[in-house]
Image (cartoon, rainbow, N blue to C red):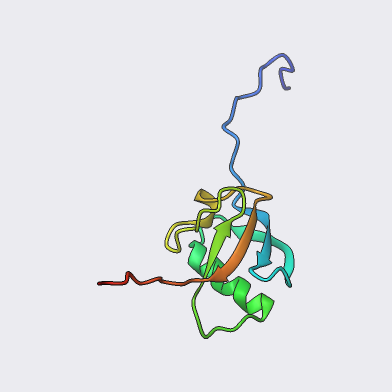
Amino acid sequence: MSDWNESPVATQPVEEETFDFEVTDVTGTNSFTARNVQRALPAGAVATSLVDQMLLPRSSPWVLRDDSTSAYLDDSRPIGEQIGPNAKVTITPKTHLGQVSG
């Protein structure tokens, strides 16, 4: 027999292991919802996968930019630490602008 007057044990909410977010390419031509992306994946690996899905050229590296902050995501850090569910990001070519020496 169970005692219905017992309080349930309080548990910490478990953070979802995956999440969805919106992604658009830099030209605005391609846009879709990236679904069930693993939070622990490095942002660079996610960017590479999105490049393939969008059929973008692989001749140059790509990076994700958070549309709400304009910050570029760190390729080596987990994507789930940098953006949240339903975030909007833009995939853009990674450019390294060199310093002009004089």
